[in-house]
Image (tube, rainbow, N blue to C red):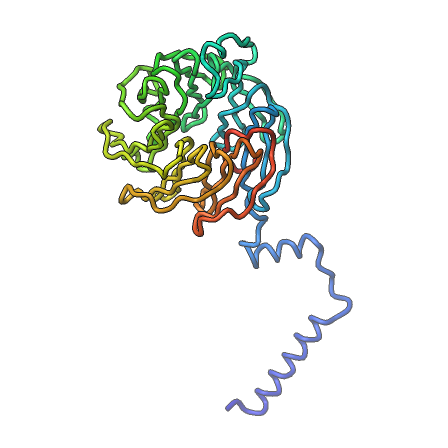
Length: 368
């Protein structure tokens, strides 16, 4: 135990410190000092991260709707051009690309000869490049004839666009706004997806029932793979080992060995399914498929290539996207003019968000 003199000295020292801290004439701390101290004390108390936005193309109202995924509410909607369908966000989140088409809209029930009589305005074809910060169309890039779906190179410098009425794919340089090359592919090309390694891009041919594989640097056709009837979209697992191709007419999903370019399995979706859009979970364990007129989304287990569940989501879902954390799905439901928000864990629709007329595509990107 300390002696009395030591205890007394300690008491005096404590009194002096307490008095000094409480003196009225001590210099006040400035706001800058306070902010600096708070920052040093809690370096993790920085501003929250940028919100994740969902961009939805509305084919008939010719608009792009933006949804804040934190609240799942619409924050903006504005015109972008004629028949907006395919949509992608640049890797840096600064630009949103939207496929525009001046070709007439021909529903499946319309005979081809009737569709051919309708007038097309090719001056309206292109890829709108929307400034994500100002939410305005900055310019319109060429996209070949009747652009519908497309993908963006990993570095954001190149677009690969399907030209449905021309049976070609256009390779577009973003910086110059020029078409670098035009590559013949399967008839009525639609789905476009760049491999995870960026070395090749795959394009579905609806009428030829195949997928054409193109070298992303040279534009050379590397090969083709036969799939089911009317392939609409495709997606790769993150490791690039498998590709999943939706075949609308058959209501199937074709599982392909991507490096070997051969079929592994054919999965039949529930009765009434017309398989359309596809998305893969960030961890690569699930593939989500929108079943169009079936009104559902099917969940495929990649490990077993079996259907885990099928979830009713809305009227004729087409475009589909999954958040980077894998927790939510967004589906564009054309006839009902809304987007469904699906809890990916519970596999239930949490909300339906009214958007424009006939929503077609959905893409996710971090706010600029």
